[in-house]
Each structure stands twice: as C-alpha cells, then as structure tokens.
Amino acid sequence: MRFHKAEVAFFIFISMLLAALAFQVQAYRLIDPDGQVLSKLPDFLKNISFFKNVSFHQLAIGSAVSLTITVLFGAGFLYPLIRRQGKEENKLRALTQSLSVRSDTLEHEALTDSLTGMQNRRYFDGALEEYLQEFGRIGKPVGLMVLDLDFFKRINDTHGHDAGDEVLRVVARCLRDCTRYHDVVARVGGEEFGIIAPNVDASLLAILAERIRKAIAKLSIENGNIHLKVTTSVGLVIWDGRESSVEFYRRADQLLYEAKRGGRNRVVA
Image (cartoon, rainbow, N blue to C red; front, side):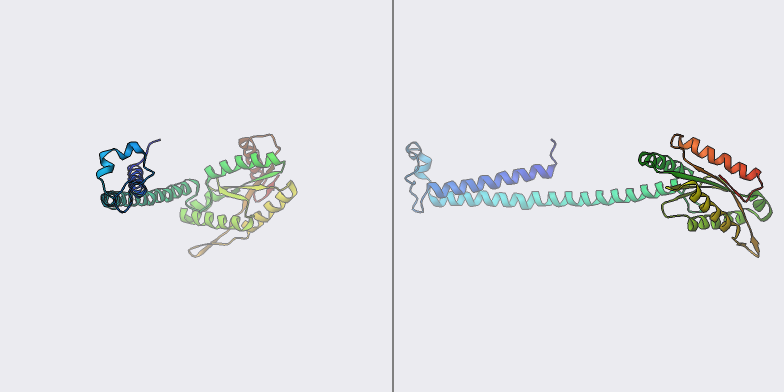
C-alpha cells in the first residue's frame, strides 16, 4: 500500500507523541519527586550511571521538550500539509463535478433531438433493445408504433423549412401529451417518430395509435399568417418474443409503408 505524504507525516506525529508520552510515564514510574530511584527499579539498572545521576526534574524537562517538539511538528508541518492537501482535494472535487456535469450535458445532447427536444434514434434503439430484454424476461408484451407525417416534403417545399420545423415541434408535443409517462417517444428520422409502449396488448396499442392519429389530424399549426394541417400514417406491432430489436422495428416499418400505400392518415397493425 502506498501512503500519501500527509499520511506518513501523521504516522510520524503519532509515533513522536506516543514516544513522548511513554518517556514521561517511565519518568514518573522510575523516579520519585526527590530524585531517588524507585524501589521497584531492577538492581542492574540502579547501577547504571544515568539512573544514579538523573533527577526527576531533568526527566520532566526532557519529557516536556519531547512533547513540545511533537506539538511544533504537528502545528508547523503536519497541519499545513493536511490543510494544503484538503484544498487540493476540494479543487479536484470541484473539477470532477464540473467534468461530470459536462459529461452529462454531452450525453444528453448525444441522445436528444435538438429540434424537438425528444429522444433521438440512438436513444430509441438502445431503449428498444433494453425493453425487449427486460419484458421478455418477465413475459410481458411490448408494443411498437412507427409514425410518419404525410406529405411533409410538400410543407417544406411550399412554406419553407421553418414551417416544417414548427410542424415537427408541435407534433412532438402532441405525441408527448398523448403517451404514458413510461412510454418511450423519439424522433427516429426526418419526419418519422417511434413509440415504445410496454405492457400493452394489440387492442390497447391500436386504441392508443388511433387516439394519436386523430390528435395529430386535429392540430392547427400557425406559421406566420397561415394555419397548417398535417396527418400521419402509423404502423403497429406487438413483439413476438423471439425477434431482435432490428427485426421488430423493421416489421413495424413495413406496416407503416402499408399505411402509406393504403391512402395515408391511417393505422395498420
């Protein structure tokens, strides 16, 4: 194990403190206030000149000096070192928090459609795969809805891309309002949206899709002095429990194009 400089200094400080305390305890154990060696001192130590000549006061002074040195070491070296290291750790913590916030921001931007504020295709694909895995494990159904706005290119060509962008933003708000809190709603293409609806059967998914289709058809989108109307075609599927997320989405996409070929503004399941 590798110790930091402050830790090493702390260990030295504690060792010095313990040594000073031990020195003082021994002084009080071996020497009485009159300077005589206590009777319990072993005979072979009584003959040592140090114990014959040293006085209680000398040992007390030596103990006080050792304690003073220890305190000065702690106050003059250890405390500033710990304080400096604390400041460095605070700076590092602040930097880490700043980087974490930046990382979260970048991750949010990477998974969010900048125009509508919805999740994007990258987020949607990951969520779809995870939903299939988790709901497949507990044997619950997962519904998938793929929507495409009808004649959207005509809106861009006739009224400009600003009008088209406003249509996408309004439709995105409508989708959020019409879905449940645990549904995943994302913009997966230019004018294409995807909705993952867990724990619904085919009939409930069809009811949800029809409600969304009607809500979008009722929208009146203002762009300058004009009011735009838009409709959507929808493909619906319920996961069969075996297909991959890619196969699952492809099946919904095929039904979407059946809705397009069938006259648009309709739901095909």
